[in-house]
Length: 375
Image 1: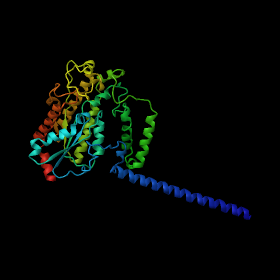
Image 2: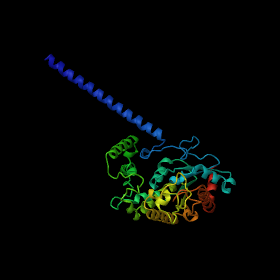
Image 3: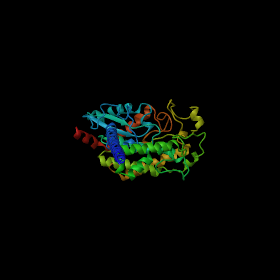
Image 4: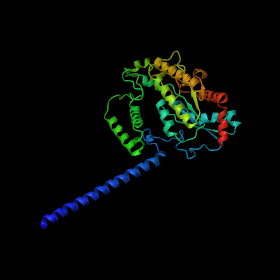
C-alpha cells in the first residue's frame, strides 16, 4: 500500500516538475519572441513589419549611411528623392546632378541647398521604386519626389501571355517579394508582427531554393532566349500604371509633391547588336554602355518605352497635383547625349537637370515657399 502511495506521489511530483518545466519553457519562448520582436523593430526603425519583406540596404546615394540624413529636413535644405534605376547611378549621377541643381538661379537666389537622395539601382523596376518609397522612406520629410522609369519594366514582357504575372513573379527576383506583400495584405493584423513576417520570409526563401519554375534571371540573354519574341506584346503598361498610381497615392497621403517624367531614350537608325559591340553605332561609348538586347529585341524595347511614356502622360493629365515634364521630347537624341539607349553622357545629364529645373520654374514655385515656411 505504502509503495503504491509513494509511486503515486512520484508520478504527481514528476508531472508537477514537467508542468513547471513546460511553463518555464513557454515563458522563455515568449520572452525570446518578445525580445526578437522588439529587436527587429529597433533595427529597422519601424513598426511596420513589411520592411522585412523588402530589406533596406544603405549606401552613399540613398541616404541611409549618412549621419546627417534625418527624418526631418535640415534648415536651408531642399530634399529631393529620385525614384528610378541605373540612370540615377550611372556616371556619378547623384553628386553631379545635385551640383547642377545647386548652381541654378532657383536655388542660388533662394539660399536653399539641393539634397538629392537617389534610390537608383541597376535593373530595378517600378515595383522596386514603389516599395522603396512606401517602406524605406516612410516618416522621412521630402520636398519633391522624382519618378523616372520606362525601360526596365520592358524585360517583364519577354514571357508568353500565359506565364506573364501582374506582380512580375515570372521573374525569380520578384518571387522573393510579391507573394509576401500579398500575404501581408490578406492578413493585415497577423502581419503586424515582425516575428510572423520573418517566419513567412524564411518559408518563402526555402521554397524558392527548391523551385526551378520561372528560374529565368533578371536579364535577357539574346543568344539563348526563345521567349524574347514574346516582348512584341507589351503587357507591362497596366502594371506600370498601377504602380505609378500607387506612388501618387502614397505621396498624397504624406503631403509630398511628385514630378513625373517621361523616359528619354535614343536608338540610332543603324543600330544592331553587332554594330553596338563593335562600337560603330551613334553613341559616345563608355565602359558602362549597355546593349539594348539586355532588355529585349530592340523594336519591342522601344514599343514598351513608348507605351510606358503614354501612361505617364495620361496619369499626369488626371493628377493636377503632380508636376509633369516631358523629358523624352526635351532630350536631344544623338551621341553627344547618350552612351547607349537610355544612359547619358555628362552633357545628357546636364540637359536632364535643365529639364527638371524647367519643370520647377514653371510648376513648382510653391515648393520653395513651402520649404521657406518649414524653415
